[in-house]
Image 1 (cartoon, rainbow, N blue to C red):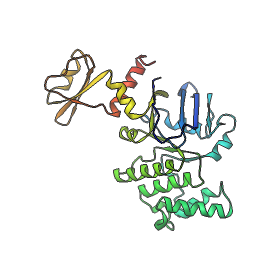
Image 2: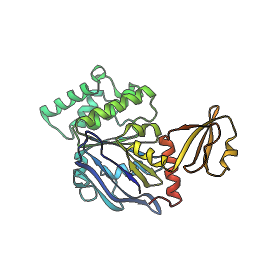
Image 3: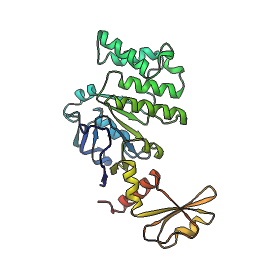
Image 4: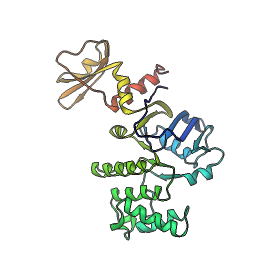
Length: 307
């Protein structure tokens, strides 16, 4: 599996999450296949892949909820296979649907979660701090069920980190949110990372991969590549060229020698060629996107061309 990592400025290299050939089977279905990667202190690490790729199954194993079939992983050095209950004390977890209790108020949700980990004055300080950090003070007395989707996700992340975990697993935290709410969620995630927490964020939004320090591409349970977005894009740019061409027939271009793919994008065509193929006449050169990276690398993985 290709790895691209030259170090992220400002990040510690202390490993908070390590997976070693982690695998999970459900009967004959191999949902996660031999996945290995590391996540560092203060890092926002993205798991990018479509629905059904194995992202949630992987996160459930890493959070101690689901036992691995083979392999192991550790959170701050604690094995998820051998000590899952201790792992749960070290992490925070927010699910795809805002993991809050709709009939409790915002404050009560945070108090309930905090009580699992902290006692007395420390619990009260943690709740007050989370309300302030996440801008929830003005809605502290409202029931979570009446909040908008963006506010519920804000609360969901707040309750995942209120006790000060080393690692937070955020499973598609922006799913269904509008662009402004999504941006707010990412700002909150990075604010927590700057405090030293590591965040593992699953997403199927290709543009969100750009927001991560590093990203792992997951497809059919396999980790196809791991690296910084810029390094992953540079890797495909060494093998392919990307163009925009005004007008034309996409199907006709797909059959030409050296052309990898072509499709319509508004009034223009998006054309991908091999690096050694001639440029389409009249086309404008473009940079690869994370969607290009994912599609091309998963195709190579399926064809057995990735090492």
